[in-house]
Image (cartoon, rainbow, N blue to C red; front, side, top):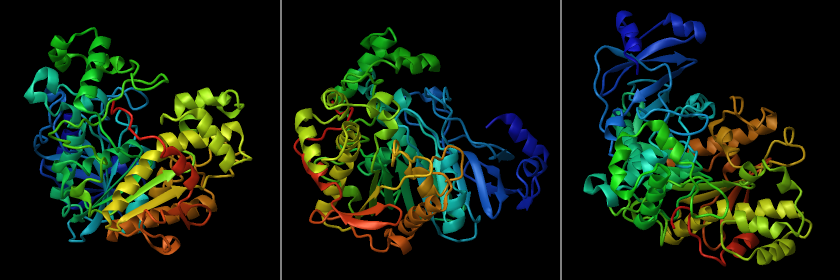
Length: 532
């Protein structure tokens, strides 16, 4: 945080547990400031409507001097540091960019400080694949969960893309052997911070739930196979985000070489990456990835390096180290309408154009003619465009969830739960073009349907679904069992029945929903993007 901000608070002579902070009070009526003590020093946050909020808390030092290396702890400070604004996002392209390498910040919402409350702690890992995103998105605001569930909510930033997942061990030697996973190690460092400060923020260090959507869910799945993360969290809730297999060192080396070529460098010049301008590093990441037919930017993600990640996260089985951690694995019914629904042509497909579209976008290597024939048998009234969105969802997004669910179910612990979001806001989407698209469940789980960026609307129907999903998450965080109220009939997933809680206008349990689609895509092996 900027020294000038620190000086402002130091000069204010803040000494009480809570007092009016004029600047904040003007911006947020009824807000007062509150103080907490962290391992780095004292911090000032705000208290509004019974919720204490601390934004931009450091959990690690600036990573720029240690680019591609594990982060160090944050430096201590004197006086009182403010925690009123979110910290820097990680370097990235897109709306959160360009960001900063000084990006190891987290945010805390809590009902109380130092009261011995031992509340469940929910730590959210943001999506955006492994390339983009930040914990400051308005949809991730923890106020509603904190207030309705008497829990502590944490969101965070960590290194992404080449800064967090560029494998350099083969080129720069042992000092950089873990560079392909330093983004994951940042998450581990954040979880250590959470455990160390649980009591200060009214939480229970022995009851930490990780939850995350898309890339956030994938990062959580990867943490479940990382020895360094063992014991740091106790429940996992993933939303449309899986990591079945990771990149091997050969595949990761290959992408590193492509990245170097985009920068005009050779293998022997890899050391120059440590001093290149941030902007040049980001620009070079737009080079095409070799793993897909369609034009996508270079993939970065976890690397099975034999050190940080000694195995694939969920292959050939579920990671034994986390077998007893209760886990929810969820998806939305129409995932790919978020990615592929922006092209009007995809809503006007005919049967002649569909095979080539599927060849490009379903990701699983099945003959499109076989896929189309089966979908026409299963859903004889579907249009070619409806088949396109359903098949790409089943082959590209949902398939990883099924793999993880089956791997966990084979363990026999009975502590894995599946959900599917079918509901979508018909008042906003009356023609059903977007339906239950990828990311729709974020504001429902956080109960942030009125926040900027939410596409649920704020109808009574939307609030009813948000109530059901957020209460299920809170029940899960308290006990490891998501059954409560509207979801009381939910049962753990089993291979025999494949029980799934379907969040619709009213929650219902279905055995093996879309079973025909699941069986179709089992005809081909599943290999996650980036593995090869």
